[in-house]
Length: 342
Image (cartoon, rainbow, N blue to C red; front, side, top):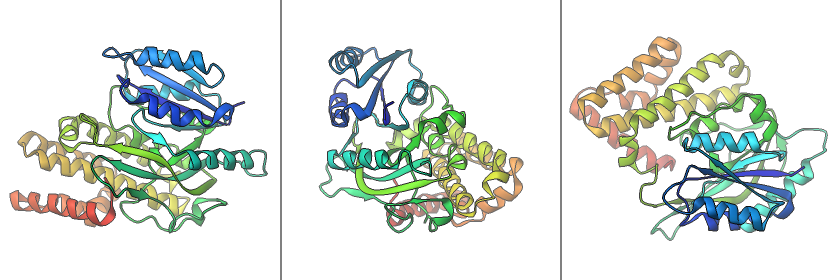
């Protein structure tokens, strides 16, 4: 059995996917690389996937499917994964060789021990186009490094510091057992990916290495603010999925204090991003969508609504009038600089 399965969702990725795949081949026979061609039509992504599968038949598998979006490609990766652990690496990103080999060595050393590892966390680096100084997202003051631990051993996560898809490796069987399914034809489902499995995570390991290189700056990238506003309905859809999941599993989540605090904070930042994008668009339609989103929370769970609405972020996002909305956007940008979230 392979140690680590790595899914690479690819959609018209021919211009940059080789760098991603080549960085992962360094793992050799310990890894299974699943190149998921998500219905690419504009370039030779499918041929490149088949080329790698033919050249490295014991390491690379090419999965061809109809277009369903990033979440659908991740779903296909999980369904086909045979490795003990699972990671997603986007086709325009890559991993650092030394850190990657250290991850594999650490996973190997933990297999067969008395305690099963559910989730590994590593650092990731923002590879932002045009910036010489790279921002590293680490967890040194929150998670114990170099040892197995539980949620109770974590320190309080500060706002803006979250476990993202770039930083996480899950036990494959855990993802299948918790019935994780990401919605198709929807952007921003990585928020669901790093949220829904958490109540099932009992044991964690933080390896303090800069593994994942997260590229920002490609034209048309989904994290571009203008593009996010144009896809705001998908952001709201993901936001509501997270709200519903949190409320449905709240009794279970509350049993673990640090888990509860973390998941509430994560829900808060997703809701804040939705709100500020709706405000930024400046249209009456989107301002009404913001009110509808907050009303959705209120109707779903009044206690959660009060906590979100009267927190620092919620209060800043719901100030009245044009002046209040301008203040909301400025407050959000200040928070971005202070808390270093993208």
